[in-house]
Image (cartoon, rainbow, N blue to C red; front, top):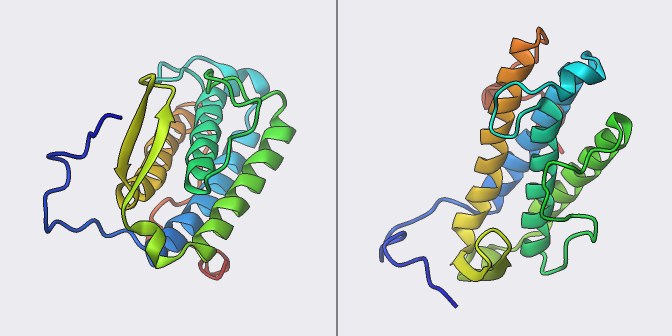
Length: 186
């Protein structure tokens, strides 16, 4: 097994990931996915599937990759296998827009449920997994991987936001302090 943690986190360094962080970010995730999906739903299929020059090409392919990544990380966090249809093509999960919306909302609930029940002890130590990306077993501090889950979401939602704006859609606010009370109470 490769140890990639050397030099990443030095002795005495602190990564500020804990249950409070996970809850805040899981709530933000649910809010922002709803925000961007509502904006994208105002576009027709051709506009959502148009290649816009982003890393994954289209709005839909980027949404698909984000769904895939969230599901993969959550399955690792919970020590279970991802769904069988989660192949290595992270951009091919959206068969219909309606089904995607249901799948995304369900996964957002699962992430929130994980954040509600994750113990302080979960954040200690490392998590090891087989990485299909590198073809090897990898290991990283759990705190770092919790940050990875939520940072990855924010990164790709930023790409989606830019593509939506370029397509003429207008998502609502994205600043965390603008999160509606209903999401803060989830």
